[in-house]
Image 1 (cartoon, one colour):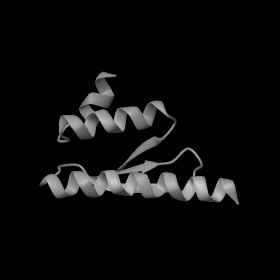
Image 2 (cartoon, helix red, strand yellow; image 1 turned 90 degrees about the vertical axis):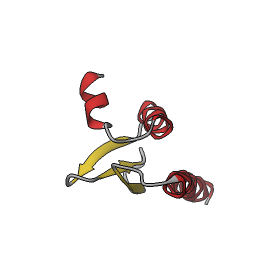
Image 3 (cartoon, helix red, strand yellow; image 1 turned 60 degrees about the vertical axis):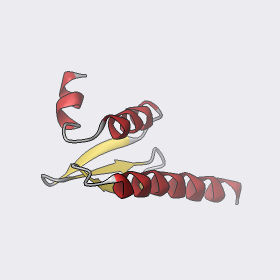
Length: 80
């Protein structure tokens, strides 16, 4: 867990908590260069890229919206 905390340094607490919850749900986290992360959904197809240092509240809202879009897309594919 110490390595994961070090990996998530730069994120705000609310972002760190959301990422940890997604990791517990089976998502995987990959570092994209020095400043971005990529969260990959357990289906291996869908994912979300986000900045390692959030600049404002809008970035947090966009991050959450991206997660919801991925979850809706996966649910729609499963239903069809």
